[in-house]
Length: 173
Image (cartoon, rainbow, N blue to C red):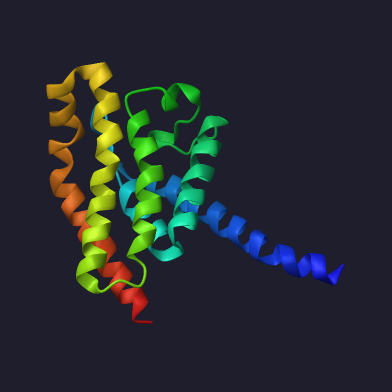
């Protein structure tokens, strides 16, 4: 019996980290600027940190747990929403992008500071690829690029820099 408990401990720890990460992501979704059709939230900062601090698998698992909670109807998405309708709405592509970014940000671990910054920026920008593509189905390409990317460039720069600075500060400890 002790052997079984010992071998399951890493899996339970990983699941716990993913669950805690999903709750951090849910909390960050509630800090938002009311914009339409895509709200500006702190979710992308959380996604970057989850991946960068936990590694690719943990970043991906936390986002997957978050999306599963939202799919079940829990109010984890921006403005306390949840359910499959949200996951099919204008922001669905960004939610998919969170998966990609959480995974990619995980590769920032252990890199020198400039490569970490580059990986975090690439991960953050990766969110916009499926985000803008999906949004274009609702608004058209030009409008999707404007309201789904260009409006977010300043916030993206600030949140990427903040994630990078936090990662640097935490890695020194």
